[in-house]
Image (cartoon, rainbow, N blue to C red):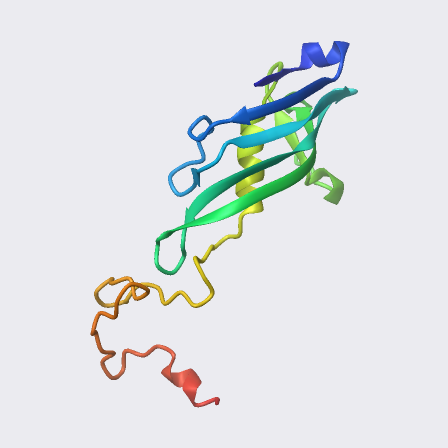
Length: 169
């Protein structure tokens, strides 16, 4: 859905959209597994677009330890401001103030809602997800998923990188 600045000059735009899995490209390591429901409003404040609303979906991401897909529910409330990219001075260095860190920029006549939703989903996820707290991960020698079976690999003396910390018990 394109949010057109010329339409915003006339009136607010309300949206209530459902995006099926696959409609928004989240990249290689993020899979949308439920419809993404988004609702909210867009309005023009001077030359800024203000986008407020919420989204809800579920995604799968690889576990940081064993690489198995793990499901994550996503619910996000957002209140975002976008300025025209032409407002950025390219001639001189500009110091960014703290309140400007939350402002995005749009090109041309508006912005795509899908781009904003993708950004909000990605930002809501932790840097590293794990499938469960006691995930044993992959064997560093043979690559076996140790949650499914023990591999029988033994740590050779001198390989234990945590051994120096054992003295501090």
